[in-house]
Length: 447
Image 1 (tube, rainbow, N blue to C red):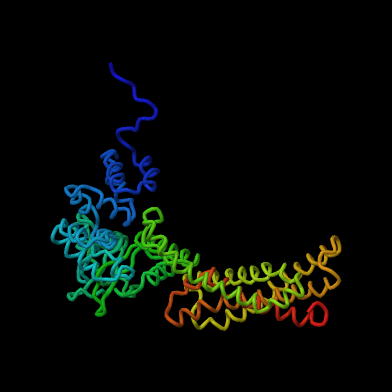
Image 2 (tube, rainbow, N blue to C red):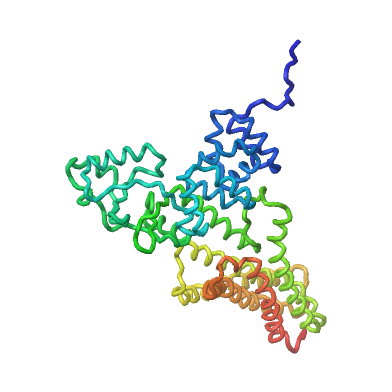
């Protein structure tokens, strides 16, 4: 007698959609391999190709050695190079490289010679070539033969001379819509937007955004075409760069792998360094508080507004540094724009500080009128808080906006000017500003 499966029994096979939902929760290699083996065979190729390079590397490591050849050979050379760069174990990297056919292995090795974040490391060597002296009909026939292989795109044919130098580009549409006897050199566009093989991937993404291109040729120092970068390749780069900047803005080192794929100890290591540095920085706040211990003892009411003052400065600094770093990443700000940013942030800081100062002054006076909370010198206390807020917010805004420029000048990543770092810097200065204003306004009364 057959037993009916219960609701708790796992299905023998999984659809691609079902596995996508479960994939991020799988951590152990055995779990990855077992789940992938339950995928319906007709969907496994598409699922594997849709994974990120990190996930493909993790899956290849989890699969039995006999299966790795099939899946690594499914990848285009540039994608295979991306996967190998994510494999940490040298012996596994060499094993996977050895599973490729000879031609692909040479192409992948050439790509691995480039830095991972350079144009050469992103490009694909599989592009459509045409000769300038060919006719349109000959070029179409040649493109058709090339398309039988695994080209990145056949939308454009790259026109090369005998030394493989790029002399122009011609679109498939141009070839199809013109007379068949016209020469490619008469149809091609010779003013081609290109990048060098050592161009940083952020700059490559910026070129894509500026020119709205589907693909960009990558040239060596002598103008020879080495490969092309397509728009779908750069989408991953934009996501990676944005993720890295956001993580740095949060006050930590950027992760090398997705959150759930990062080992716990590695995660702690990435976060502990910055957290310790910020903690040491915050200890200066305690030092500043000790410096004004006598003032606080004589006017305890001042201590009530310390969190208000320093948090306002930190918040304004965090806003400014986030805006400036993002504008730098998008290419909207350059070092020559420093003075323009300074003028804007001085005005912004004054206006924002005055806004918060008015709110703070009103709040103290209203509470005093209703509850008599702040004693006979409440008006002076309100003035102290209002003026301090203007000074602290202005300083925080300037610090947050100028620090990324300083870091870039020192050849550091501007994103290292994280929001917590700016807030810590402004905390200490905020206390100095606050108690200096208090000393001037309250001298002879409460101090």
